[in-house]
Amino acid sequence: MAENFNIRDNLWNPNYPHHSIHSDLLFDIVDSLYLGLSEPTNHVSTRYSNNNQDSNSVLNLIFLRFGSEKLDNHSIHPKWCLVSDHAPLTITIPIFEEHIQIRKWAIIKDSDEEKNFVTELIKAFRDIDTNNLSNIDSFEDIVQLFAHTMKEIWEKNLKIVNITKQSKSWLNANCNRNLEKYRVTKHIKDWKQFKKTVKSTKWAFFDLKIQEITNKKQGLWELINWINKYKLSAIKAVKHNGYTCLKIKDLWQALYLSFNIAQNHQIDISVLDEIPNKYLMG
Image 1 (cartoon, rainbow, N blue to C red):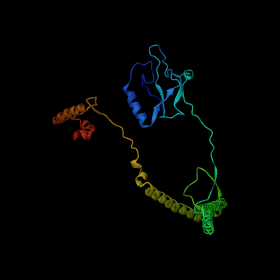
Image 2: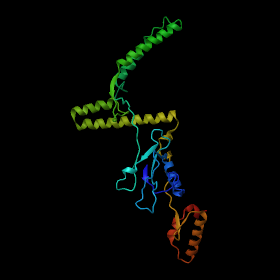
Image 3: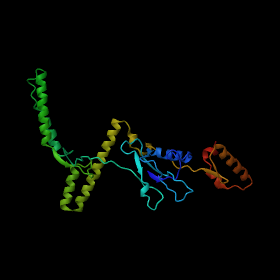
Image 4: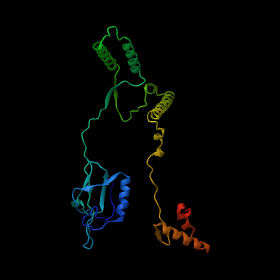
């Protein structure tokens, strides 16, 4: 978050001797956004005065992700001002080389390959010869042989799958089959059948996910948005006779005066509407 906040404070300008109460409000806001004040690499002014009566100041600030080690400072460039009286601020975002896998070997769920894998694995397990199972060494030999056989069955039924941002975890063989049928026929009936299959597949998939969360974490409420962090609404201060009521006694005084005026039928009803109910009911 970067902006000309127009606040002078010795927190970011050592040459300014005072602390502003507006800075506390600003830090409350940025703390709620999990941001922290960025330190400049060069401590210079960000706003340069056009006359000798006003001094240069630091008004432009940047708030970055709190606790970030890779992105924690910015630079101020006074020489880039040109016709502006504010210096540009820049940050350097490190970009690291990363290998992105676009293909993988997998057995597609509910596919013919999965059925073959399960069938052959069960057969291999049944064919294990345990007649010579007499000691630990013979048991380890059988285990190693079964592991080798299982690996061969797994690799036999593998299929290359492209990983794309459109990949859907709920998409199964039935959806693919109906989609391919529509691509061949281009008939509206096949398209409707594909959409119907997708809808039923989604329902079954997400019902299963909800059941898994309920059984494992016992936290079905985690699926409800309203238990997450709630953003408080903005607060509007009560004003009476042009003055802001910042203390409880000021609110009571405003209520008292407004009530007395009401006795003479000279009250402005909008004043009472602005007083919070919790103070009226106290």
